[in-house]
Image (cartoon, rainbow, N blue to C red):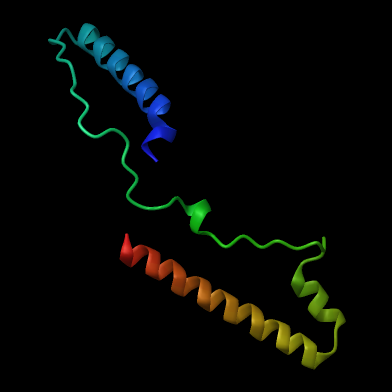
Length: 99
């Protein structure tokens, strides 16, 4: 992963340096160079990576379709969705406790 972010780390270091120099001039304090030790560090995955996105070919929400199907089918679909949500919460909890 370090290779992917090397350009971004370099650009961030340049911006940080420029801001520190400007602050030193504005506040009339001595400018000290900053030695970057470890660069960017990711401690856990961002939300959009962990989130289980719903993908459907139907433009209608599943809840609307549930109203059109028989009661037994509707209940089965609801149980399946709740089971998926529970397993998704378990995965999220594992990610938080592991990271």
